Image (tube, rainbow, N blue to C red; front, side):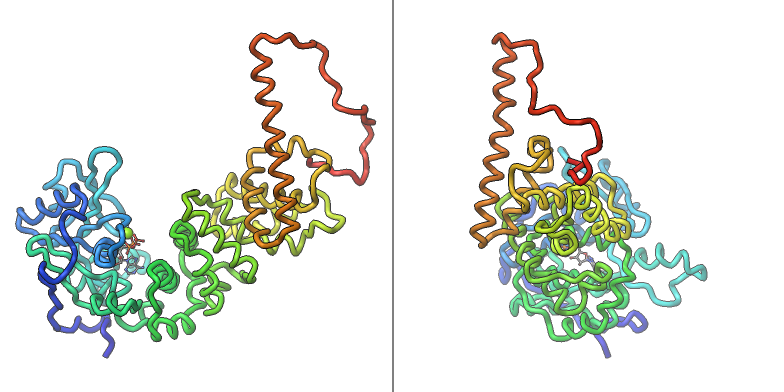
Length: 437
Ligand code: ATP
Ligand code: MG
């Protein structure tokens, strides 16, 4: 029997309970507003647990990103207890309790996995029902993805409650799926990507069954909602594990299904790792930058700098290379445009300085970022890094006349005649030149 089988009831084992004296979580580590919510729920006779990633991270001695609360109070009961409470979500009804500033505590009622007889006849309605059936704390633990994500901290007793063996897995630094990975990955294929993400973020090993499950179910991820995949992909970059996770995803056969037909190469994975280091050093990652990095290699294969290709060609090819991804994931036009500018900038950098249109190019708002991408890609290649340094000088120069103008603007006399910028050009089309500059 598998641990988790929605068609049978959950095994009756009682949880492992660690009393306060046997674990390291102190209330001082939990933020004040979350504590207020936990206490008020508890005072009003409800169970109130800290759940999910917050408990995991505190036990690992890491700073949690946020704290989530689980309770047996229904969303409406929660709403009655807090003036500053709003119910949100159709698929997964949650209570959001707002505090000063933008701070928000998310309170979810314990849920269980739907059983076949829970489902309405109309399949279109399944989606809304499956995530909204309230359950016991134990059932709530079993519906979660990984054992380390299913630990509870009980505000009434200050103890940790573990129904799924998460404490042992934290100890062993091992990522294990709750129940049978084959079943859980079929239910929600995005869990395969999350498995790789958590293993990389925490430095945990993947349980053998998780690994086997990913090999076997990889192709299912192509059916996941594009919006979720897009969000999870950006989460990888924000958590500074894009390089490691996508490298792993490729070796496990997941990547090609994640982004239809995508094939990364060593240089791309190295680049992504350097981008992760850049994010770790405090530079926020933005989607156009991530996209340009993912598709840079493919772009350079179609549009090598040492060819007859013009800037106009580069613009067209960059558009073509990004188009399937942006179309499938509904990436907004502005983001797509910026990613394209980053690639075209890269092409211009490769060809060296002194080309037509350089002045305008150096003043383009995307050029500094494109140069960053270029420098990251060139790491380890002395000649290319020297080229990057030349371009950096160019950028500094381009910024200088601007300063001069502002100084001159305040009083200094200037000739009224506009300055000529070079020999007059014929108005006839030049043929073979580089439009688009
Ligand atoms: P972090 O917020 O640090 O990335 P987290 O563990 O809080 O990590 P979230 O994505 O915020 O992750 O999800 C909160 C919790 O919801 C998880 O800890 C897990 O218990 C549960 N969960 C999230 N996604 C799934 C899923 N696809 N299937 C089952 N449970 C999930
Ligand atoms: Mg979270």
